[in-house]
Image (cartoon, rainbow, N blue to C red):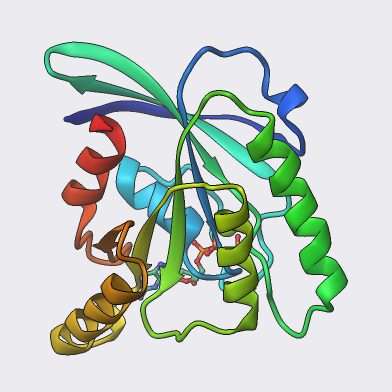
Length: 195
Ligand SMILES: Nc1nc2c(ncn2[C@@H]2O[C@H](COP(=O)(O)OP(=O)(O)OP(=O)(O)O)[C@@H](O)[C@H]2O)c(=O)[nH]1
Ligand SMILES: [Mg+2]
């Protein structure tokens, strides 16, 4: 598995703007500032997605087209970088707007192959996360949970957290990751691309 090229396609708010590119898509979703854009950059080893230490940097769904080599052939995939939810003391209304945007985008998009739920390993599930889980459940959507920023914690903390989440999400795949040092990159890439 080798990334050959990665390029920004466009920013969209609904699936009609996506165009008919007949390419499978992987969506990166999660709380604001959790490291979704940084994850995409690390995966493709290129700074294509805009990152920021100010939460709420990503306002639209940004699409990136990735060309890669797999089993001797060349293939393409789209990584979509979603605006984060739940930054600062955002009123619940904002979550509703966000939910509406992802709902329309995700529901009407037949190219989506996988949802990646990006989660800060240091956090514990709160009400907003539970609303998100309910939303995923109600639409019977499978996801891969990526516990990120693992460089900020000890190995034993990360292992404990992974075990805990494994008990909670027994059906879902859980991967640990660090955009800073590349931990988990190979595992995540091959999981996303081979599926
Ligand atoms: N140490 C460390 N910092 C990280 C990691 N991933 C992201 N960051 C930092 O976290 C901040 C937010 O990263 P982004 O990638 O912009 O987060 P985002 O989820 O795209 O944020 P929004 O678009 O605002 O929702 C930046 O300051 C990153 O440098 C990581 O794995 N380790
Ligand atoms: Mg972002």
